[in-house]
Length: 405
Image (tube, rainbow, N blue to C red):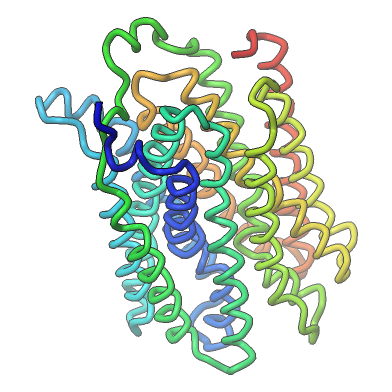
């Protein structure tokens, strides 16, 4: 039988294609706002409350985009339409991410919440279908562990956007110029991966294979996994949204705060690569417990040790397990619900997004009630750290309650 273009490709090509795709969708489409926020505050375009609501608009869009991915198989079946092509959805998501990032440079503050909302929706599509496409082909090639390389993408995007933002601050660029620069970087990476997304052959499991594998895990196990992943979304997002601002508050006048965000991105990329080297025989739920505990420590340490060393260690401890958590959760999801991977990945992404939506308003509420910004951020971070500890406890319960898969 003649190989398709993708199945004939080396696994590393598929994995690196996913890396760049998620660098665009997540590292830039989702998280470019974090390093640009101090520039927007400096330019007088936003205050902290407005920044919180812009972040929440993005996360709400991500939630709705993820839910669309969850329900689209049933919707397409009801309408008697052919399933959507994962490769086409990735291309649409990446192209719109570039355009919406560039549109944030427009001097239209009333439109910014809608632009961030739309960016959240399209980055959810890009994330879900990049995961579906890449993990599906890597599984067919018998190298599912290479999927960890795919999830280095957000770290690559975070690190590159953070370093670029630091240079922009030093060069006294305006935030609008920063949005254009990030859009051009996203367009370059999109152009590199565009030709690879051209084959969806074999991504949907056949009827016999599906019947043999069964309908996946029970409702209770899926619900526990969904809740735990949602807690991860809440647990990291306050740090991920406000890290440069928190660092500037704790270290006034220091030149280092602009480097903590790219350092977190380096941790994200390294953690994903390390996750790809862990043997698949190890129970992923036990790995997730370790990841949640590490991230809980990383979130809290910036309060316990508000120094240069504390922020550096905290950035790494938050970053290292970030996409490792996503990788392990998505592997569990595909095992629990093999008949429609995009649906379960969309559901989990929606839960993660719901946690993210709650985070910035909680921070805004704490800031409004605290006597100063430092105290408000401390209250928010302790709540976030506690949520990660709760997520770790859920995985401990799952490991005792359900047999490993």
